[in-house]
Length: 254
Length: 297
Ligand code: FES
Ligand SMILES: [Fe+2]
Image 1 (cartoon, each protein chain N blue to C red):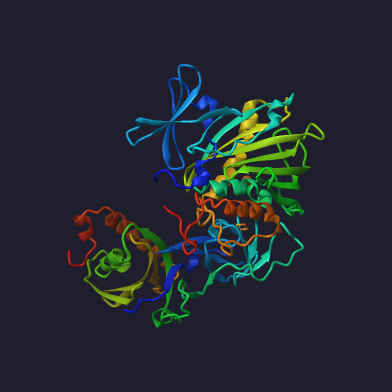
Image 2 (tube, rainbow over the protein chains, first blue to last red):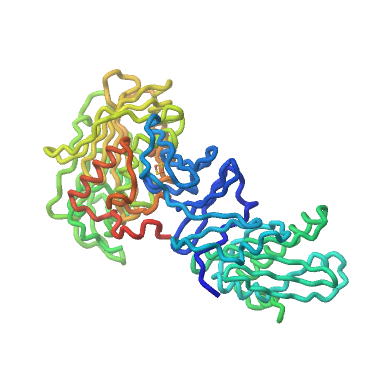
């Protein structure tokens, strides 16, 4: 699989309007924030003025304000306001470094490189699938380790859990790219699907942003989301236990 | 880290604690410029300070000065003079030492923050400033070659609670004086004595390039408040600064032009940086311009 500079920085649902969050990537810290008007943006987590982390700042309308001296920047990273000089039009040279940030069907996708590369097709192909967000979990393990685990993980389906009849489940694993894993679980006539976006924070920590296939019934979905969230919590405890027998219980081969 | 080789930093008089922090039965065991040291009160009543090795054994004895309520030492052989503050002799003033706050960043970042007027409304909200009064009026910043100090004069800022003794908002007048890369004094309008200045001093103890302890004192005309009240006020202010200081990238002060973009309100910081550059100081300064977006864990 091709190495890409595009990463999944989080779930759209996890970034509220008017909020900012820190996003770690290997060697580069970002602040991802959402304007009041809804647009999500990614910027280097360092104010060009005196280096303060933007992720500790706050959003004012459609601008990101730095916590230290209140300088405000727009979505393109251009400085719009220097409160110490209220009547001054900030020089155009004062800019924060921004990164291309797009939202694809519930995922926030960012190009952390300077390569101008187009978004890989695996992301745009998610567009149109019926998915609902579950949550993001952060694991103390490298991205390749997490990927290996997930590619053989037993996901206890909601349907099986519901009727308790032990209907056999067939699992299909898809590695859409280095950062995207799809787990399909077929129980009789129904299919439950998870899309898991993996984000390396550094060499040994990984974020996993999870969505589940929308199975149609509005009433049922909150229970499905909770069901998946519980599985994720369990997954995390077992993976971080460093206890091989615990880890093996996650695997289909075990 | 090992003791620095920065000749300028080595030849400064640097704070290592308050006089009462080193007693007969309780030495102050700390570090200075990467060198482990130990300060204790000796049999003759004076404070002695020694370099120590990894096992804590005393090595070389260091020159010591007990002044301004604090202990100063130097690791160099030809130190620049410690600053003079004649105000310490003035009738009616009171010295209150604040103690120290440990900050995980370059000591130079801590001094620069102290010189900064623009952050008052955002970091010290409703104490030293508040929106919408965010404007920093023009002031004068210069290197005074004759005394080899940085000065900023004619500074003013509207403050809600400028000092412990202030009850209403006031337009505070400020002067800043930087006498060493690690020492700065603020002269500030006294809220209760027209025409007089209160002093707030900052002595930064550089432990490592990205770790320091900020010791401070106030020397005001104030008969109303107890020492504890004055101490709490200053500590509140410093604790508001700490999370800012520990979240600047990079931790070491960048002196390469273009790495950070100042505005006119930063004239003091710009002058301070120019002065540091002239002195070829490297301790606490960012070495590699490429590694801006990182911070040692
Ligand atoms: S560091 Fe961001 S406004 Fe000053
Ligand atoms: Fe401050």
